[in-house]
Length: 297
Length: 315
Image (cartoon, rainbow over the protein chains, first blue to last red):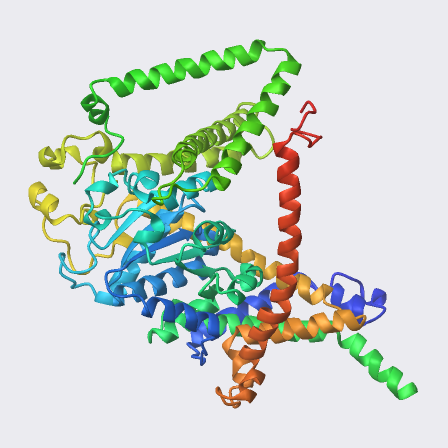
């Protein structure tokens, strides 16, 4: 495989040279820079940022046995970002002995993926020898209500009467039979917090429909979505936010465990470094031109 | 284990009233469709205009109609809950439509041996395999006997349902199953569904998405040129944000104290400031623009003023 796609005589300047480098070399470089730090097991320090600290504080502030609605709306495409977030959030909810209802309005695969993440979280938090009747018990401490198609009229119904809107859990079993739903009236009266773990634009609907009802809303989203959410953080319509894998790693740090996100951050760090070096490399001709002009002047 | 919503006994307990209502609803829908079919084109247009206006007016009225003095919702609010459930049912039909469309296209690909028809065979293998694995595994919960009468003979074979995934202690005792081993991890259950979903689907989908990273690196390397002041500003911002996102970048400034005025110079804090203040204000402006645009567009649709495809023109 030749380094460039051009013949040597055709290489007129630096820009042409770099634009003709075979992209497979660039891909190979990224692969090496991502995998090597993971294989080497590099551990890098992580510092929690204010949105993550606020997310953590909002769960810490909830009294035990309060009900939390976890709206989990991600698919396997964003597994690397949303799965560690989901595990860390579930572990925190379980540490605080909170009760939670899981629902999905983003993807039909989300209930299964979230259930898998929940099982990992239970295993990590309590170990394999947890007695069958210990916290958390399905139906008493948590319920997975499965997937519903997202539409504003239905979310309004959910806010007014969660049991009537959700009706059954993800296996089609009626919700009214579960002790968790005893005494549940409206969403704002019965739930203290809503956590939106998402890879799609689900947050504005939650903010519009329950943000004014004294229910704290926190968000765990993919990194690419985060810039759009900052206005909601500034107005405190979102109490906290986890941004991609980095947010999950910061949350793991706050919860004092080293999970998948913390381990993977080394790979992400070096991938960013590689990208940074490539951008500098791509601009060398322009930088050299600046210096040449200065010398001439 | 409780009975399912989808069990046919549930309909029987309602003395067949549900069946009657379901059949009558379907007949009524067919009758309405037939009437619409025979209405002239201009009449159809006015029906759409009227229905759109009524649908929008319901929500507008519901919003502005005050609650009762006792804090109870107004009468329209209660009615709108039904609309939410109706939309769930309509959405369920779109799933069926999607499946029909996929099957139709891929079946024709195979029948006419079009180019790459082999991929259509793969589609059918994946579609049928996943559907069988998922439905067969849960079949006994929907259509099996009452939970109290459930026996091992009612369960699907072990390669479809790993017995260790049945975690209800009383049901395990009833079925005569041994305790779940401590080493068992439900994520690695030995059944076809887990193999297909967790072993194949999750990894394939995650791989598809991760390929983006390679394209982004290649594109950034070739396209990120600091040809003028704006591009230079953008690149500096991008580098600060990239450095602020990863521990390696944070390590550059971890010698700066975490408390006090100078803490703002730490790269993660500076990056947060850029996102929260500079980006946040711009995003807010965009959101205002979007909101106003959405309001104008909603009014145009509600009042049937919008023109173009789907709004008056023949598709």
